[in-house]
Amino acid sequence: TAFLHGDLEETIYMDQLEGFLAEGKEDHVCQLKKSLYGLKQSPRQWYKRFDAFMTTHGFSRSAFDSCVYHKKMSGNSMIYLLLYVDDML
Image 1 (cartoon, rainbow, N blue to C red):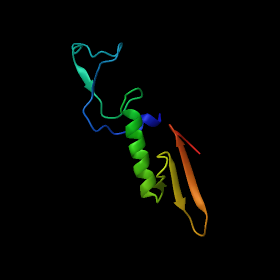
Image 2 (cartoon, rainbow, N blue to C red):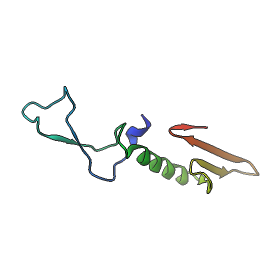
Image 3 (cartoon, helix red, strand yellow):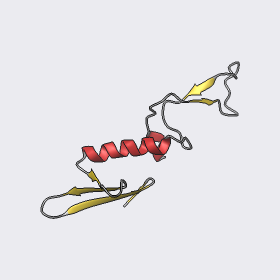
Image 4 (cartoon, rainbow, N blue to C red):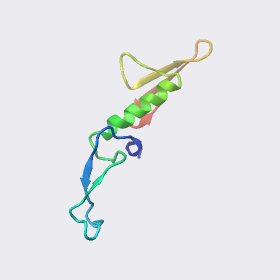
């Protein structure tokens, strides 16, 4: 479900789903307002939203791996967040 929360930057249309055709409007299409699982844009949109959230909360992205975030806490302690698709460690 992580990919369902991305905002689209471009206009995307899709055919009506089989079994959910609007009667009398079978030739109409649907305009997507949000990402759908399976869209090529979905993972990128999700990552952009995730990255914006992390940076606004004081985390920095690693210069060596864009899926590693870090934040220095008080003293010498650090928080590291590792991201793999939509799983975090």
